[in-house]
Image (tube, rainbow, N blue to C red):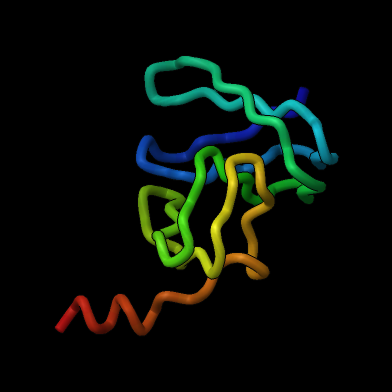
Length: 98
């Protein structure tokens, strides 16, 4: 079992606190102190993100309760979330500010 940290109640990713291998069970605790288990779909480096729910292409990736990017493809719960499947949304944010 590998532990992960859910930083904000609205996040759709958690941060793994040690190296994760494919098929490892990853456990995180939600805002109500309830434990949840996810099976990793692949390797994830220490301190990187795992999807805790499915994220559709062009939906926001949320960490710290903030939008940190947009999914560049469908991301399944248990997937490694990083630059290979998240695109920058700074231009999108600039449009919203106007």
